Length: 157
Image (cartoon, rainbow, N blue to C red):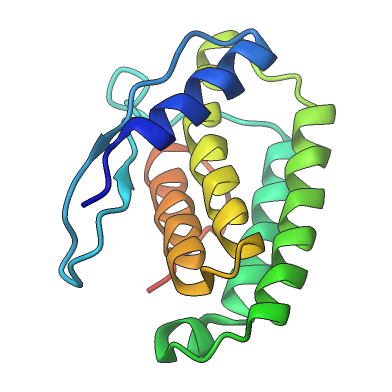
């Protein structure tokens, strides 16, 4: 059984590198028996957080990269080389958002919870754990849509 330690360590390292308060993560079991880390994001006094165009651009691109391979992900047929290529594409979008971040501190803190989960998924994709990595990214994308205003955003299933 996995523990929350890898994600917690990643989140702390990620947050320290970016000057963001440490991010807590906990695990929950899913219907498939996997143990992906649950994202602990809160709403802004009951409302979704307001982002910026850089966030919208990067998250739309990441969603597109995952959506293009969704059938293979669900079917368990996502090839390792395709997963690694997708990881590189997603990492480029993460780098773009981090390099162009101008979010208010409270929004930034919540957004980095999502980015930490995507980063963990990218690591899994690079390591050849295609399904696990993709599921983490899908979970992060869906949590993002539930907590951030993003015109036209649609959850992935």
